Length: 93
Figure 1 (tube, helix red, strand yellow):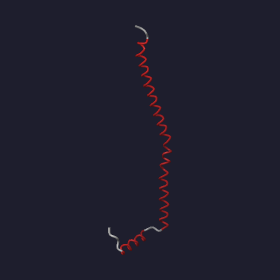
Figure 2 (tube, one colour):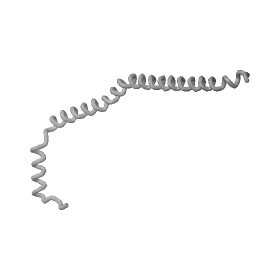
Figure 3 (cartoon, one colour):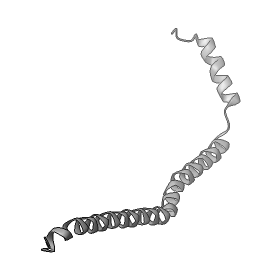
């Protein structure tokens, strides 16, 4: 890339001065931008806190359901074992 000629540099500087906002406008825009960024950063934390209770409730219900299913399966297996073993433990010929 070739460096700009002095004439082109002067025209570019004049264009920047003419098209750039003054300091007051730039400061207001910067403050507004910082406020929007701060709101955006704080928003996900609030959303996470709002969803913690429902997620915890769903996980608790899922764990309870898993334990209930396990209990039913193991209880059914014990009853089946008892039915199969009972004739052999009765002592009858």
